[in-house]
Image 1 (cartoon, helix red, strand yellow):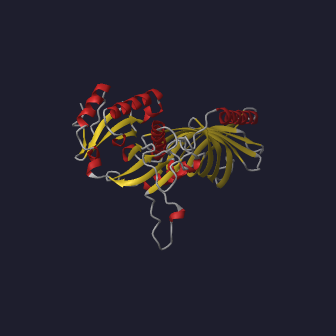
Image 2: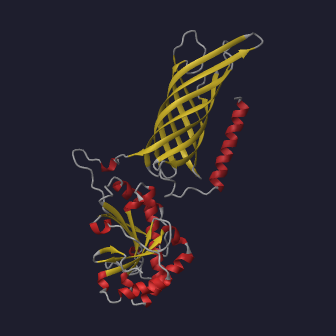
Image 3: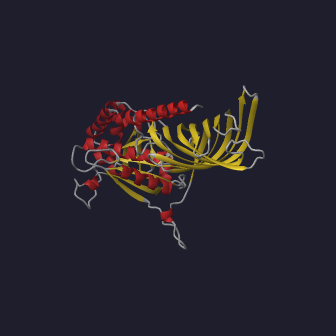
Length: 426
């Protein structure tokens, strides 16, 4: 690759990165993908072209192919990724002087140490810089009478696209343009493209290590606070959720669950607070899932302002919260809940069957699919169902509207003293 072509490529790549960073939708702080704050191990392969421009009289300019296989370890944070790895690279470059009828060929194998830093641009794209240290027989692409151990360092911009696959794995398409950094009259330029895959691995926080003592126990309870009339999570809240999830990601979720309870202050209308508490709980649950907690391990509930914390003012900021706690799965909550979709007539009949029962002995649960909580029309239906039940004499404190991480329609089930049952549903 000529010097002009290399400069043009770098200018175009830089302009593209600037445009993407300026005009594209940035990756949200808590939703950069499943890779937020994870340590991963991976493998990959690449192929490319190499050009050797030499000012040494005994050497010819050469071009050829290069290929390699690598293993690496990488840490992904909110906005950047740091990678270090090793690879084995082989190359073959040929040059020819037709005037003097002279040809040269260089075939070499080197062992490389590679480091890179990448920054998230959005749309699952990253831009960064890659540096490699090469060592091996003829690793600097020179022509020698005897092959000796040589060294070379090259550096340049890199770009990659990534996507999750097989649930936990991350697949990447990568490209890099590297130029040797030595001051010798020989310059090596390499253009590579490749593919890699990696999977998260657990690691221990340094802060929780203690010499001669046990690691600090994980917190079983966490509270996330929200601004007034808001369901949005700030960066500090996202970090707290992520740390909570990481501390409990290796729980036995067949025996335990994570309960996510949304709450609101006493300011505002009942139904507005109920919906807001559901949305808050859902946003927290999404970060938990992105941090590695299975959806089936999360129980979501929005209480609105029905469970005000008595230790603070009813309108205090502490009331606008989502509580996270780890709880055991009892035989009651292990049972299968057979929810049903009901129309308004069936809801009225349901209320009639419960009128003679002691209110404390049952609870009517309205299950709202998570995708519907952002739909105003769906929420109007939920409010209509709530009104119907209350008009039929079902007390508001016996009705729980909760969000589930699922698709489908709004469904009902009854929780009674005898366990979860739908025997009373029409």
